[in-house]
Every structure is written in C-alpha cells, then in structure tokens.
Length: 379
Image 1: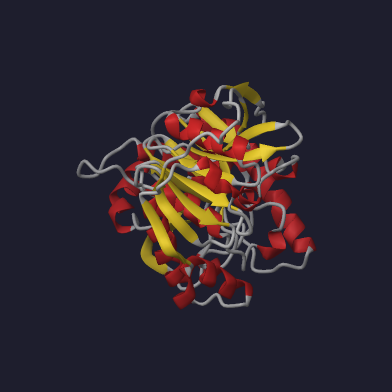
Image 2 (image 1 turned 120 degrees about the vertical axis):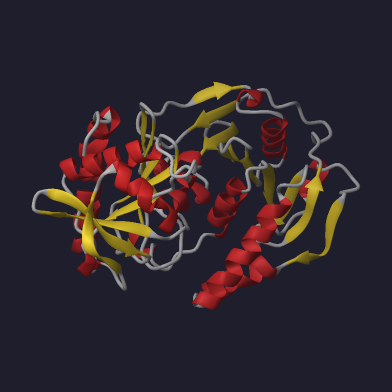
C-alpha cells in the first residue's frame, strides 16, 4: 500500500491480536472447532490501515461501506472467489465497494507470499474471524461473529479518527449490569453464541438504524405501576397488546430458529423499532408485548425530580461520571432518567438522532439511575 500510515492502527493492533488469540485458545480448550485462526499484529494493522484510507475516498461521490474478513477461501462456506486476487489497497477497495455494500457481505482477505490479497466475497464466516468494517468516513469497527448466519456481531474495538476505544469485555461483570449490556458484550457465555438471540439487542440495533431517535420503555409484565409515570390518555394505546414479538421469542426458547423464523423476527423487530420514531415513548412489557407508543412520560406524583445519574461506557479505561441527565442529551434522556428513577424495575432504551444509544436502569449499589452508553457496541 502507498500513502501515510494510520497511527491508530499501529496503536491498537497488538491489543486486538491478543484479544483474538486469547478467545481462540479458550474456545479450543472447550473443544470448539471450525474457528478462524487469528492473524498477527502486522496483519491486523494492515487491515485497519487499508480500511481507514478507503473510508476517506469516494466512488462516484458515494462513501464506501466495506467489511474485510480475514480468512482463507477454504475457511469460507460457499465463497465467491475471484480468478485473480486483488492487492489490499485503498483504491482497489473503493472500486469494489459497490458490489459488497449490502449487509452481511464481506471481502475475504488472506496473506500470500508476504502480501495481503482480496480473494473474493463471502457471506458466512467462522466464529472468531477478524472483521474490520467501515461504517462511516474515518469510523471503523473491529468485530467478530458469534457464529452461524444470524445474530449481532461482537464488537472488539472502535476507531474514529485518532480516537481508539477498546471494548471492556469485563464490563458485564460489574454490579447491576443490565442483561441487554451483557448480551451486547457477548463475552460471558461464548458457548451459547451460535444459538443466542436477544430480542432487546435487535431492537436496539434497529432503533439506532432509523436515525430518528426514540425511547423504548420495558416495564414488568406483572405490574401496572408504570402507568403512574405516563400522561393519560395515551395517544396510541394498543388494544389488545401486540404480542407477535413475544410469541416469536418464546418460539425461540422452544427450539425454533430456522430461516423463516429469523426473517419473521427481523420484520417484527423493525416494525416495533419504527414505532419508537414517533414522538413520545413506546411501551413494551418484559414478555415483549407492545402496549402503546407515542406516550408522554411524566414525573410520578410525589416523586422528586431526578438531579443526577451515573454514566459509564463499556470501554477499557472508562471512568464512571456523575452528571445531570440533560448533559447526556435532550428531553428524551431527562424523561428516561426520570422514568427509571420513579419505576425502578423498568429499563429504558434511548436512541439519539446522532447515533448515540443509552440504556437506563436503576442501580441499587449506587442508589441512583445508571446510564449505560452502549453505541460503541451497536456499530
């Protein structure tokens, strides 16, 4: 490759290598097979460097969206293989980008003769295969698949210009960690990656994708105490409750997980995420039954106004901060914090128009609302 080096690629390459090497070794000890072999630090640096400079170019005035997967053609089920491999160069990647911009398509890269080559495209990749994805100009995500065809990737690192964030895989072991965050991190139960489907994770991804902002209140199925924090009447109450998502989730628990079921789940998730784009909050029970959307949040009668929340982000070196909820964003964040302050058995998901995503939950350990900034896990 020609051109200057991307310093952040060099700064993080060894840490990414160590992460993948450790998890591959642990998976092998569990007897897991079919794993992708981790590349060395130089290869990881080269992958990130090429992806970064490609992200700053344009092809017919379109920003390239590229996903590079490091594996050999023999490791890839049903690969589309080029007759002649193409050098891993930013200019070549930009030319290929229109062919692979749809979600789930990766450019396969391997090393041959000391150089890195793009050998073709692939849709299915083995577990723990290193993937470097361009999501926006100068914004890259290093990730790996949990296994299988469906499911959210596990993010390992995020690079944005000169800012580097390494995901803290131990964040889910902190007290009061919401199950949603545990599932997004994906490190605590690697044996279940292949078959795991977390409905809230998919809803979070879809909410963030529509870029209109939104609030999803997840309230206990067994109580209607949450109504004390909602303005009546609700503009768009749902009667009877929309229970399709709940039925699909329960079908998964019963062992159903085929392609037809996955497609049905994705459609319903997008439908419900679309409701969150309407002004106000969407209300869903812990059984995934939708009760209303467009609801206005109000402070519970007799409850004090929330004045501070503790804010964390699941990245290495991250430090908890205590701040007023408006410092996180606008009225959505303030309303979400107030709702959790008053309804302490609820969880609230807040998507911002700029892509930020926050999960609000009550923390008994800190005796205050805990705001988990998780956009680094949703890219």
